[in-house]
Amino acid sequence: MSSLLDAFLGQWNYFLVILLMMIGFYAVIARGNMVKKMVGLNIFQTSVFMLYISMGKISEGTAPILTGDAATVYSNPLPHVLILTAIVVGVATTAVGYALIIRIQESFDTIEDDDIILLMEDETEDAQ
Amino acid sequence: MSEHLPVLQVIVPLLAAPFVAFLRGREVAWWLTLVITGVTFAMSLALYAHVQDTGETLIYQMGGWAAPLGIVYVIDAASALVLPIVSGIGFIVTLAARYLVGAEIDGRDHPLFYTAWLLTIAGMLGQITTGDAFNIFVFLEISSLSAYALVAMGAGRDRRALPAAFNYLILGTVGATFYVIGLGLLYMLTGTLNLADLSVRLAEVEATRAVYTAMAFIALGLFLKMALFPLHFWLVPAYSFAPSAVSALMAATATKVSVYVLVRLLFGVFGVSFFGVDSGVGLVLLTLGITGAFVGTLAAIVETDLKKLFAQSSIAQLGYMAIGIGLFTPAGLAAAFIHLFNHALMKGALFLAIGTIAAQAGRASMTTIEGAGRQIPMTMTAILFGGLALIGVPLTAGFISKLYLIRALLESDFWLLAALTFMSSALALAYVWKIIEAAWLKPRPEDAPTLHETPMMWIPAWLLVIATLGFGILASPLIEGATAAALVFFGGAS
Image (cartoon, rainbow over all chains, first blue to last red; front, side, top):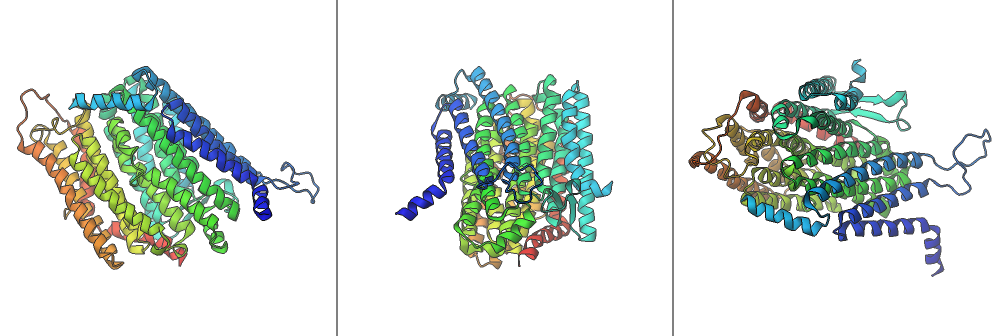
């Protein structure tokens, strides 16, 4: 039992990431409201950012700035740089997503998935 | 100059894109885009010729930093084969875009349209060239984000393009994020992101559960991106409501690039020795591939909208590529590369020809093309040849694809699968016949709008039709190229 507890405490960052990941993914799949889908997508992406950031941390490690002292332990800066890029990509995705939602609201007067599917089915029947 | 070619063919369209955004007037934007895509095509042909002649692998070090610290661009037999197909289709579709985009997109939006257009091409070329796994993700998102915007531009004619683009965005982002999760796990295990270095270091790491988890995330993310059955639901609406030029570009290239990235990761990183058919990945690919082939073909048979019909048939064709990959043999992989190449040609031709109908009539359905065979003979004949190539009729490139795929299946003793592949290809005859019947055997209804065609409209589609026929009759250069491409992954792994 205690080994299980140790395993949990030693890797608590991963459990938090998985929890966050599932919350976000659930919202993307289960919610019909497009804004809520976008929020879920952002939570999902953020959990991945945290996965990367937490793996770069080395215990007792400082910020990766050269001090001249050879004994200094540094955290790994590469995951931070990768995630900086991924955050930019995430912001761009969010911007495109919300821009689409605004256009959908303007032309369908709703941002609920179910309502839009109904409206689209009507149009398909009209066309045939 | 020539030693910079590997990076230039990504940089040139990438840097040209913001310039195009500031141009005013539709003609200028189109001309610049045409020149840029033409230059890119010429550069990838030069790279292909170089790799073919010398047989060496070009490695370009970004900023002079050597791998694994720096980011490298790798041109080997595989990427040199896929590059010209993407940039070539990009060039030919741009040629057709003058008419298609002119008819479907508001004139003021043209510079922005071509900006997104160049960005999506640059992103695809980047994914093919780069030798860095995280770099693939960045280029994947560059090409996808601009593709979402391009699909949404179909809203000017049909508002259903907007929800289609939104769903594409959600699923595309989930797929890309899955890929990044898998990459994170790999980085934790090995401490490197360079593809070549990853494969070396993964061989040293024991096959733990973490490696399999990483592989599952990466494969699943890319399955979504390549629209493998049953993760294909974003594809049909996105392709059918997008502007016609965008449908043609994406149907011919976007999913193919994801197939290529999947091959790079599965074979180039995890390696053939890591898993054969027994490990499950091969079995998953074979099962999903053949199911997708049937589901896509059957859905295409009942479809009446031509864009949707050929989008469904794309699902089937991607299934054949998955089967080729899932065999995990050099012959299977070569068949997948051959089909990737040929399918890009035929789908490009089909969507360009359908686009000229949709641009005039609003939509291209079975009723729109009734009796159109005599009114627009060149366009309809292009669709006919494209359809015949999809079935795999001899003397078309599609025949070569199916021949090599079935031969690879028989080599691995998958008799049943070979029979099923043959059956599903033959079923494609049903939807192609439907088109022939509507276009040539039925009279044109009295009240139908008059369709017209000019050489400017059918020449781009016919360039691709001629290529389809050319590679069907003189197939040996392609087969040699695809075999060399497949051996890249098998030479290194054994």
